[in-house]
Image (cartoon, rainbow, N blue to C red; front, side, top):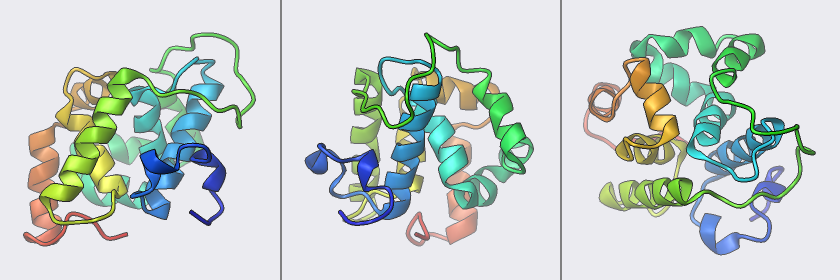
Length: 171
């Protein structure tokens, strides 16, 4: 578990042991966003922000056809505008504060691992995190995406166009 974002998952190696470095970066940014929003836990809305900030290639390549992503991947200020849709719970905490995961996010992470298994990948990648998020349609993160017209079905269809039936990821 070496790498610049090891602190994002320190203390939880069994949870994130299958995660690629790019997926760990997404988790790192999700934790950072939860801290910035004063949240006592990391939720699916923070995972969505982590995906947008931490994996812009995924956002552009796969979600660009969804419409809203084009507005949010071009600059830090644009990403902040989707961040405003996530309500602040309290005062911002230090960015490196370790936070627990919500039950909703734990379920999404389980979905992501199942997505990786489904395509025969031993690693969980950002694409699996996105699919896991959308699969749990009642999650805050999925609802934010759905409001913008991005659904599990549209993303699966987009993956099919991008990868022509091959593995669902490129990192």
